[in-house]
Length: 361
Image 1 (tube, rainbow, N blue to C red):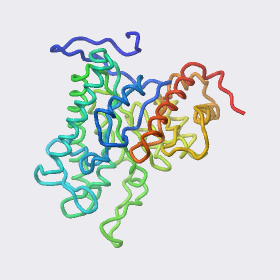
Image 2: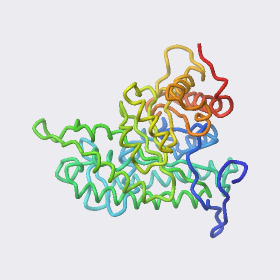
Image 3: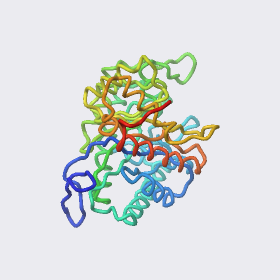
């Protein structure tokens, strides 16, 4: 490994590329993905500047259709694409305006990240970067079939969607790795996972329901995407509560969640995830600015108390726990978004450098 803690890199076709995937490290800060505004160059420069250990490819849903979590995937799928409906997105028989726009916006964002990467002197160094995409279960829950029902209601369509996503993400990761000469971490966002498992999704009418997807089926679909990747995979869920039991059993290298959603009943799942070798990404900084003045210590405390309560040594925070905002930051003021990243970075630094010395009244 080099001085940055990443694996050695070799030159391939004139571009530095990483030879081995890097794990999501503990004691670092990163973002969830979304960001306010519509300026991809400014956003990329901010993220690379603020999140030096693990910057990410920014999502800017404020630009409209094709830029949000679900619509963006239309630029990543292989042989599938989306169109819009009054309710959101549906599978379309041929490329249309939404797919073209999603593709153009993703190209713009990649160009902006590559420029920021070069300006920061990171090109070809094997420095880690994170890219995000909606996971297969959230896609199946939120995208409609041409007839109006959720993709989740058709098991064949769900499999096709998962396989298309797996192939498309593998290509996306390879492109980012080559363009930046970077190690890549892939984040799958599954905000709808809990609803998929508990059957709380509504159908096209009050008389039409969407069955709960059995956990073995859900796990197989998620692992279809995870195991197809050459990069380590983090599965993140902002659901309340997150489906930690399923995520622990998945092939993911790491799982991420909003720490404020974890109650006593989820503690065993968190502990078992750590015992199973998973890395954690804890959402410790809220997406909305608190009403009172806060410091990094305010947000460091819950993670410390979690590890203490589970009976793990404090060095676990430095070795196995990354931190970030609780969820995406697209819907909050830019001023708080920037401060949230700085606070997360300060928490991560405390976890990395002095976890044993942290104390709270």
